[in-house]
Amino acid sequence: MSQSKKNNILVGDIGNTETKIFFRNNKIEKKIALKSNEMIYSKIKSKVLFLKKFNIKDKAVFCSVVPSNFRIIKKVFERELKIKIVELKNIYKNKIIKLKVNKKQIGSDRLANAISVFNKKNNFIVVDFGTATTFDVIIKDVYWGGIIAPGVNLSLKNLISKAELIPKINLSQTKIVIGKNTKQAVVSGFYWGYSGLIEKIISKISKITKKNFKIILTGGLAHLFKTNIRLNVLVDKNLTIKGLIKAHKILNK
Image 1 (cartoon, rainbow, N blue to C red):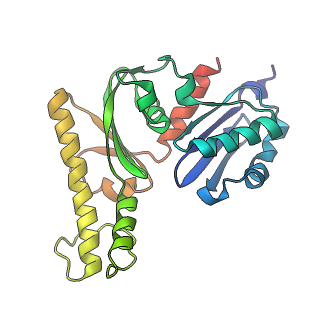
Image 2: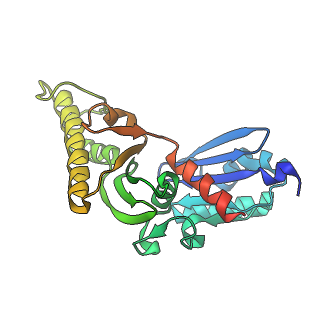
Image 3: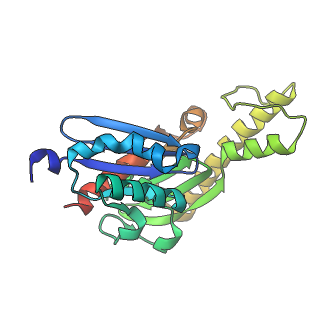
């Protein structure tokens, strides 16, 4: 096999609102983003057809929380590009990180996040701001489980849709606690409310496990909460993709 074929890495993260596909070899690096409403055969084909020229032989590793979208992407890749796609959770056999939970009960994106951070020396809590706000606990090389809380944006959109007098609001950082109008009050409630939720859950995890943790924030709103959480945290928006790349290298050995 040629050197370029060996270095081909193709992974993807299929989420509720967006699908991210990442390709890298020793010459180029390409990121593709597809919104949920673009998940149709012809649209996907037009975005990924350029990959055909790289003659990719390794299996592409994807994580997905939307089975119907995974099936469409799988069909496009296998029919148009002759690339086999596997779903991380379906092929995972404790080769990388040990699981203290039923594999069927953990989302593939959360598994990818855990794979991304673990290093056998440190303990991690990964907070992912997606459709849900999730907390995943990794102690050394073991994934112990996690917590699923309502997603920030999902909760905000639901409140706006149910309360006629609340205007459309884009969440932002704020120093205001006691709002002087509806917008200020809602922003304060979500910003300080979720900041408190994050700190409290992390504190409870640390107390129950009697461990010290490194805290990693990822997902679309990670930057929003980093500065106000009274903990030493790191932000890595590419955490899921990094975990998939790590899994790809091990599973395609």
